[in-house]
Image 1 (cartoon, rainbow, N blue to C red):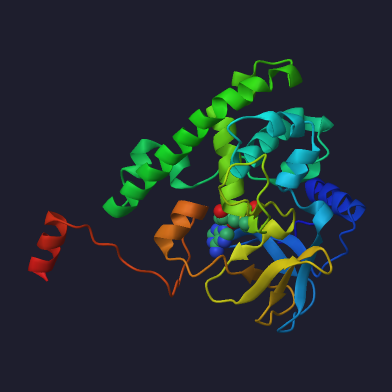
Image 2 (cartoon, rainbow, N blue to C red):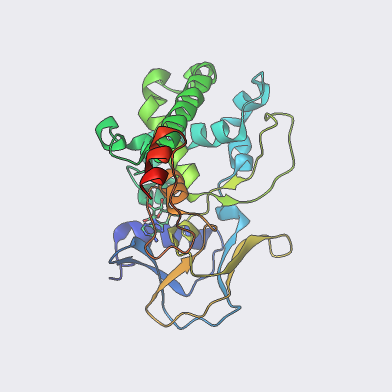
Length: 287
Ligand SMILES: C[S@@+](CC[C@H](N)C(=O)[O-])C[C@H]1O[C@@H](n2cnc3c(N)ncnc32)[C@H](O)[C@@H]1O
């Protein structure tokens, strides 16, 4: 069902137009099975560029450095990770509400996520054992990420009238972490002294990040240095008024659930994980 009439999408389209995004063959819609995604307005040919998003629409660590957070990031030692810089910016902009220039984008982001780190422990306990172990590792990673943010977030107090512990709470940083993890595209950037050595490769790409995954399609997606746009070219054709998919990678369903919070039907990369030790012995000896 077409969703382009919804006020949040009308605002987002205006915002994108102001940033030189030229219209597109794609419109937001909701689909049975995959939920919100993008639908083709016309039929799409193999090899066609389906979306081309100008650099000015991308949210990257450059955006953070140019913002009011830039001076705080630049002087922080040891240098901040690029991921923490992005997440801090997302939380601060979300907190700014109507004052944020990113508001039209923030408004269409999910309020909650379904990655295992966001699930209640009773739900995680129902997952298969190998996935449970991965979910535990993910939770620890996010908890460590949160702990590593504390001192830097405290240094931002002069920017907020409210206590920073409330602004940069665990749930706010978890939301930002999931936003980056489930939606960012890959755009490599050179290392800068103000950031730690972790790869600086995540960019949030408003509107383009409404594209859902299908393991059965092939696309070429990259930042084009000549046009200065992030472009996606499809290798599959698509009929008018169908959902347009991209492929997030050759991921099995465990990886999709961990990283993106969903599983794909008819996934050719699906596989079964077998635990080492007695479970495995029991399974094999019965086989
Ligand atoms: C980049 S976003 C795509 C747009 C997203 N559906 C939305 O409404 O904002 C990635 C998220 O979309 C959902 N998603 C992507 N592909 C999917 C699929 N094939 N089936 C179900 N959900 C999917 C998952 O929640 C995933 O974390």
